[in-house]
Each structure stands twice: as structure tokens, then as C-alpha cells.
Amino acid sequence: MECKNVNKKLIFYIDDKLPLDETLEIQKHLNECEQCNAKYEFLKQILSQIEADRDIRPNDFIATRILAKLPATEKKYKLKKVLSPVLIAIFMFFAIILGKLTADFYYTNELKNQVEYVSKDNFDQYVIEELDYTSYYYVENQ
Amino acid sequence: MHDAELINEIKSGSESAFRLLIDRYKAHCFNIAFGIVQDKEIAEDVVQDVFLKFWEIKKDFELKAKFSTWMYRVATNMALNKIRKNKLMNAFSKFPRLDSNEDNDGYFDNKMYQQPEVETKKHNEYVKESLKIAIDSLPRRQKIAFVLNKYEKLSYREVADIMEVSLQTVESLLFRAKENLQKKLLQVYKNLD
Image (cartoon, rainbow over all chains, first blue to last red; front, top):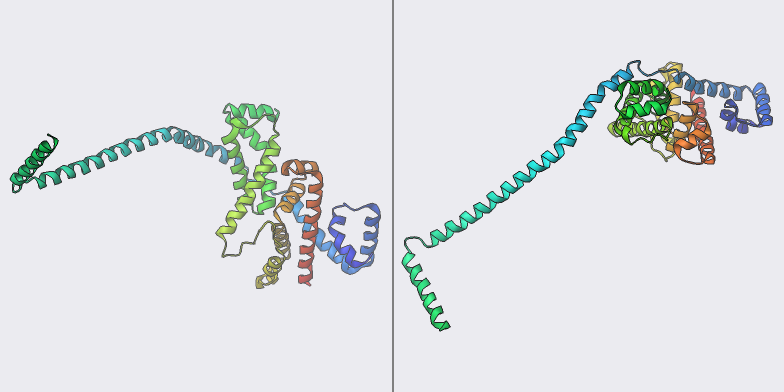
């Protein structure tokens, strides 16, 4: 087997995933080729790091840490559950109040404008105009 | 006590049963998370998030379902999300690019060898870092299959169940993952010469 082919299969050789005949061929090549053998050793060493990583363990107190987070999570959830309808009700209440205040404001302004129009200075004129219009309307409809 | 019994008790709010479940699975969950994020503290955060998630959805968890399958699936997704968030946070720093389906060869080569401090690193640390970057640079699905198989020693069948793909797909993913890793690691070797 050529070096190029061996290099393509080294990881599978390390993993023992090759058919027996190929495994034997690579084994033979590695015994004879120093360069390929060096690559094989390098690859094997790096991949053995995975086994070393598997020995790393999480903190012994991780269960305690998780359990300590539970009440907060639950409380938050319950609070959220209770607060949602209350918040909606409060929002609706303020929306209605705001609507009413806005309507009152505009209504009062309109009245004020009318009162200003029929102020003392032009009251007589207003009454005459109104009377004229009423009498005109009355005569027209007769 | 079987998982189903434990889960039944957890469903009714038993914290002691929950602690037992955590103790039973924390190492498995950690292995998967570590394999993906390659950082102890972040992996512990993932473990914490996975179990808190289970507590949150405990009432909806189907007893017929296998807890370990659910856990591996959630741990994998959460670990990948952590990486994505870290990537965003470190967009302008040295955190490696971890794009799922991109060819990361260019990045890998530049990242490893254009840093002058690489030469001064201790050999073991360098080896560790090389493996970490090589795994990080694998496309998403290849990485998941590789980590489940190598870091948790799960069979191809189990990996297929967790990833919800066929056995053939897992075989193909693992084959390509190993090919890619070999290519990247031999590049490291070449640059050491």
C-alpha cells in the first residue's frame, strides 16, 4: 500500500474499523515506513485526548446547584402565572380611565368654545340670528 | 429505582427524586456538553440548563420516552446554542468559527499557525488545542454524531435514535467526521515539521 492511501486510512486503523486484510497491510506499511509511522503516532496521541477528556467530571455540587435554582424558577413561573391576568386587568382599567379622561377633555373644550362664541358681547346678535333663523324656518315650513 | 419510577415521583414534585436523576445522568450529560463546547464551566452550565429544563417540563414528559434520549438531544442542542452565543459575543475576538456547513479548512489553518505563541506552547497543551479546534471546525451534524459516539461511547443505533436519522446516515456522518478530523490533524502535523 502506498503512503497516500495509508494516510487516508490512519484514523480508521486507529479506530479498528478496517477489514482485516487492510489492517494487516497498514500494519506492515507502518513497520516499514518511518514517516507514516510518525504520523500514525501523532494522530493516535491526539485522539487519545478524547479518552482523557472523558475522565473530566462535572463539579460534585452540581446537583445542589441545580436544586438551589428550583425555587426561584418555580416562584418566577407561579408569579408570572398569577401576575398575567392581574396585569391585564390593571392595563384595561387604565386604558378605560384614559379614554374617559380624553373624551371629557375634548367635550369640555367644545363647550368652552361654544360659550366663548355666545359671550356677553355678541349675545344679542346671537339671539337675533337664532330668532331670525327660527322664524325664517317657521315661515318656510308654513 | 428505575428511571420511570423516578420520573413519576419528580412529576409529583419530589426534589429528592430529582437529585437522584441528576446524580445518575450528570456525567453523561456533561460528557456530551464538554465534547461540543470543549470547556468545563460552559459544559456545567449546559448540564444545569438541561436539568432545569426537565424540571420545567416534567409534567408533560411522557413516561414511555427514554430519559437519556431526551437528555442527549436537549444537551446537544443547548451546547450548540452556547457555542453560537459565544460566537456572537466573541465575534471580534479569538473564539473559533464554528459554522455548521461551511468548509472550515481556511480558518483552521490560519488560526493554528499564524499565531506566534503557538511555537512556545507546551506540546500537550498544543495537542489539546489542536483536537479542540479540529472538533469545533466539523460541520454541525458530523460533530454531533462524533461527540455522541466518541465522548459518550454510544452505539450507532443510539446515535441514530438521538439524531432521529437512519443508521446509514450515522455511518456516513461518522465516516466523514473522521476523514475531516484526520485531514485537519495531519495538517497540524505537517505544520509542526
